[in-house]
Image 1 (cartoon, rainbow, N blue to C red):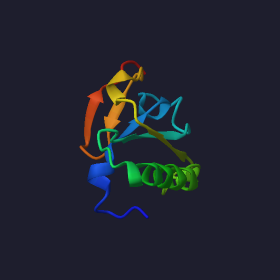
Image 2: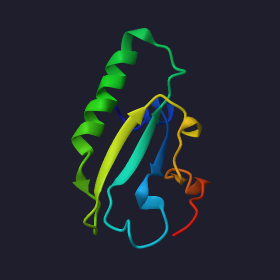
Image 3: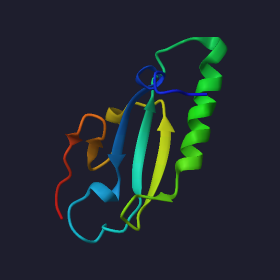
Image 4: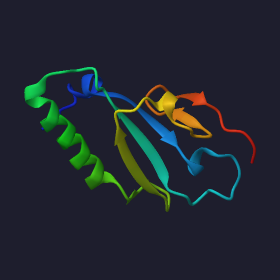
Length: 106
């Protein structure tokens, strides 16, 4: 089972991406896509698979639930790929409360 003390070590970051971060009203009801970047640098082979499986299970159970006060689903996508390697128009660091890449247009 994953506890709060495991989070900083197992997960590198949470990032809001996709149409929901684009400016304007045409995307106001789109899903909120949250990328969970798993820390792949930790190599404890006895528990690594179990921890990754637990993260995938929890993300699956939490996905497609409505964000509080909205009609938007939240979709969690665990990955080991760096967020910098992804081609999103906008990337918001949820934990750090900062834009890694600000979207353009509207």
